[in-house]
Image (tube, rainbow, N blue to C red; front, side):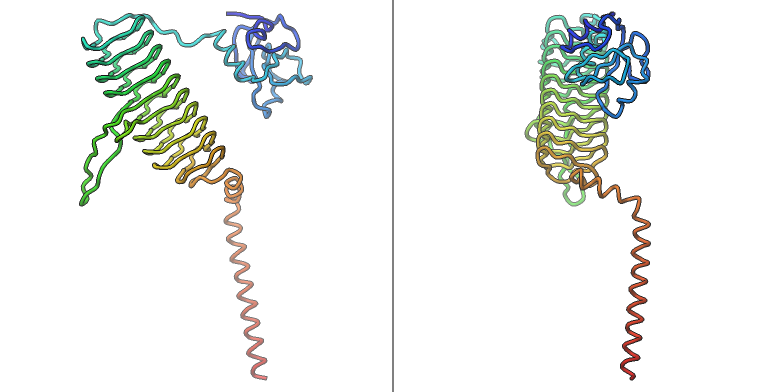
Length: 352
């Protein structure tokens, strides 16, 4: 699909600076873009690339005269870029296969209208799949599971008994929803398994990456709030509640019974202990280790995680620690020498 820059500006509610008739066929980064591509500037540190880009147009947040490239000026360049990507390329197309004869579907399960159930899917007793769902090969959906409308479940994902999944949820390949929580009572050196009688609730418009594990609650439910996006290899412990529109990047681990507020951002490989509360709009930098509650709106980093401004100062000093250690030793030696000299002088005075 091709669109003129003026057509794209109208579509995203922006305005054109430069040639409005330039033809846009695709999208790319500033460094890789060529003729017919549109790119975007969402981070000011890349502004210099506007002067050298081969793109036919660039989406920006503010007008600049330091370029000959036509500009599409809009309030949120990255969001506008997303809209244009969808318009030009669309999302992944799913093959319409209907209900495969090689799927194993219980007589008591209910499948909604316009669903496409691929080969070797298993859907157990009393499970319910809403309208317009795509279920790829090898998926297992347990007894009593409820799945809303327009969901996509990619190959070999597993949804354990009783879990509830909202509308427009995407579950990527090899992810497990509703496995038993890591709950054991240790008695005389032996770890005894605790029954996990809760379930998992995934609200509307959630996307869960590949190879994730979402544990069911021990007593209450594990909840992934509306609009959350989880990267690959994310592990969510039993009874944890993730607030709406939070982003958890790949390899995050959240232990059981922890609560995250809404619109939190958790960087890659972050570890969060159990039984703590993290406020709304909290940002946790990659590889942080969170061991205490975090108030609303804070940005933290490090292991253990501390407030970002303090953390930056602390971590910026690491490279100087060997030099500082040597300086401290030198000062200690000087102090010892002065003390020894004073002691010797005092002894001489005493003898006199």
